[in-house]
Every structure is written in C-alpha cells, then in structure tokens.
Length: 356
Image (cartoon, rainbow, N blue to C red; front, top):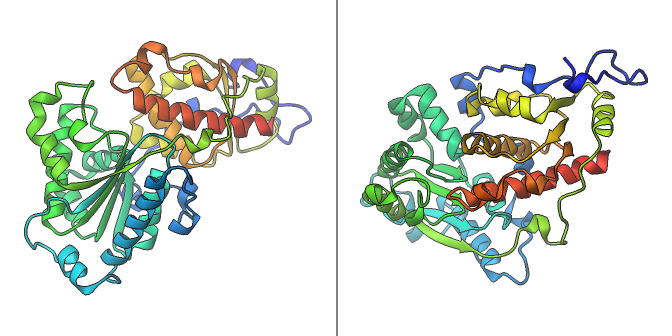
C-alpha cells in the first residue's frame, strides 16, 4: 500500500506503488547475528591511514596513533615485551587491558574502532552494544561467552547502559571475556564511571559500573562534529510530492509515512532493524515530526544508526531533521544519544536532498 495514497509515477519503471518498510516483518537468525559481527558497510574501508584528524584537536591524532600501536601489539607485531604482557591469556588481572574511546559525537570514534578491527589480526568480532545484548538474547549467556571467548579482539561500538539489567549483564560478560584474555575496545559518549547517569539509579549499581571502568583505559577524543565542520545545517524539508515522485522511480526506493513507520518499529525487536533495510537504496519519509515518547525516540535512534551504517539517503518532508526530538527529550538523560542520531540524520537527509 503506497504511503498517503501516492502511486508510482506512470513514467517510472514500476507500475506498482513504492515499497514500504512498514509492510516488512523480517526475521533474524542467531547465525545471521554472529555473521554480522563486522564493521558496518559505511566503515568497511576504514583504516588509520584514512582517518582525517582535525588539525586543531591533537587528541584525535593521539588516539589514532595509540590504537595503531595497540593493533600492532595485539597482532604480535609490537615489541616482544609488550606482546607478552598484553596477549598472554589468563595471565592475571584484566584491569586496564581494554581501550575505551570517549568523546562527543562526530569525532571519528567509530572510524577509529573499525580501523582497529581491520588492522588487528583475528579472530575478532565487531558490533554495537545493542548487537551484543541481542546476541545474548538469541544464544543465551553461556553460549555467547563461549563464542566470544575464542576471539582475540572484541570491539563494542556505542557503549551505553540504558537500564540496570544491562549493567549487570555487560559487566559479567566483559569480566568473563577479560579473564579469558580477550582484548576489549569500545566507544561511547560517556566515560565508563558515568554510565547510566540520568537514566537509572546509577548509585545503586556503583560497584558494577566501577568494575566496568576498571576494565578499560579511557582515551578522550575532543573536537566538533566532523559532519558539521563546514557549518552545514539540516536541509529544508522537501515537499510530499517530491519525496513520493523520487520513491516511485526505482525498485530499491522505499516510501513510508513517518508515524506509521515509527509505530511499526515498536512491533519489531531492534535486532531486526538491520534486516528491515535489506535491499533499501533510499528511504522517503513523509511527515517527519518531533517524537515525544521516550521509548519511541530510543527505537528511532537505533533505526537511524542502522540507516547510517548502510549509508541510506533519506528524503523527508515535514519538519527538518534537527527537530525530530523534542526539547524535553534533548534535555534528559539520553541527550547524547539523541544528538548523535540528529547529526547522523542530518547527514542522511543532506544526501537525500541532493538526490531530489
């Protein structure tokens, strides 16, 4: 069923209505979850040599150089003394073993983490925080630990703790992996000892949070959002007709009303959002509007992350991308998550506006 009743252009290659994400209900097997523990397509070619640090922010080049050294050491190419200390499995305390990249959105943390993964010899896995919690849900805790413990390196992007249950789960998981000698690397917008602040009673879980902090050496990366270095802002919203016309002229162009799509996301586990975008070349969103409900907003954050991972241009009508979360949400405990999603959505709508 075409969004808002728009049918495909009679001049286009298709005689049916544009495809809709809201009509898809993908299923994701545990085997697929394991197979997709890789850097996302956007970062498939990420390397330390392709990271472009801001000349005015020395912390960015310093972080790149440190991770390049870790990649060499963990791959057995660094000094022999360092290799013995870092690669020996089950050899004493794991405190301080991992690397934790902390910084604002848009400073290149994901690029650096993907570069570390690419330039460290395997076995290795890479996933977002939510992808690892999804894996535990699909396999069970024991089998997940057994699989991940066989890796040399486990990379965790977008490390966030949204509830106390996740705090205990991840703390226990990382403890088991560190004890097995697995090297850990993570990115986040929040320092390890501040995880959970503003979301739940972090003080009640201080021991767990402090235990997580002890697993990592924190590396702070400063700087502005690189996606906004040129001063670009959210593009002006497109007209409904422009969005619908573009969606009608290609088999991989999808068209959805924003509200029904966000409602559909509530019926799918976030682990399915990536599969929801299989074969999607662009996405038209009609009637973009501010999201007020926090649960819906958090689901939208995950969905935008999957769009961004796959570099899917977004053509949108309604409000501008920087108004998709209400001021009340932006002032709350998930502020950094929402701002990251806004930054990424602006980038995607800029790409969509260029197509239109």
